[in-house]
Image (tube, rainbow, N blue to C red):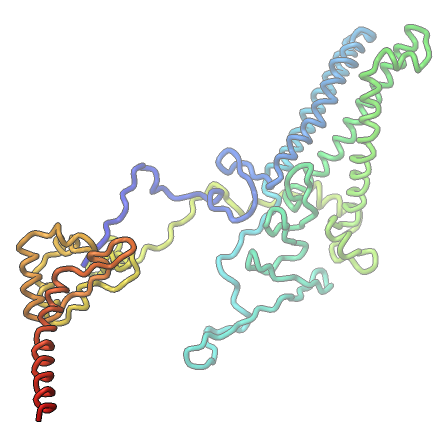
Length: 440
């Protein structure tokens, strides 16, 4: 029995167990060994940071630094310090929104069993019972029936307000939306930071916009000129005024929309999908309690420990015949598998079987197509004697074959000559009898 030995590991740490973030089935991207989790579009986060840092840098260099000369008692330095601190605070909220678990529900390893299933089903012989899980279930939330759906990807029934994000490929609790600007899903565990990020960005735009106009007004007052000439003398302020004005419409409108969602206890997904203004909202607790739910409650712990080690699968017990990995091709000739033909020595019948027992395994591998001449003389003599005794010749698919022609080996010609001699004798005697009959 041929047993292939198990592969040898070259590195000593290869046998260590993997961690959850290394075997994660979602589309997320992890940093710092699973300490930060981002969406697959995390590159857009760099663009968002650039859109925040670049205008603030221009403001500090070309506007706030000039205002330090126009204001005494460190008021000018305070203007720059507030802009820098506000920017750092905004970036921290962006990181808390983008780099944390939004509320991902762990996947099941197998589908749940149907309700009422006792493990025994009647089915025909040799047939596997077909069990179908209901696609939709109904649960009650504050006395109002709510439908929950089964997720084929995560193999679970989604809790209320949960939805599967097609971008991150995860089921997220209290799913709001997937924000491409932060590169992450917005859900139960990061919605608070998302709103604070949008709101602080709005305030930062207003701050830069306001002090750019203050600087323009200071130029008008100090040089006694018109607003147009003052704007020409500070082009950086004009660029920032236009940029922050456009940004305020975007982030300011987003802030107002989410203030409405918080006051009515809705998510963006629910607002566009269900339209609770046309029916009762089971989650609405009133404006005050709705704001308390978002800002004054503790954020639940993550259901995923991305740095936890994945338990190893149970190892099957070794076979009683021996250890190691057994080759699936055990007992088959190598040439048969590679060439796709039957073994040559299997066609020899009884004589071939007798001869096969006289050759060891190493010498038998040398007896291949076109390699018979390399076999030792003793083995070749044994082959000739066995063939003569058995009266047969082993089938050789390519011995003596050359390109464009076929040549018979000397053994085949000798065997044909032996068979042909009786035929010649029989033929001559029959021709003599025929001549005698004619003469008679």
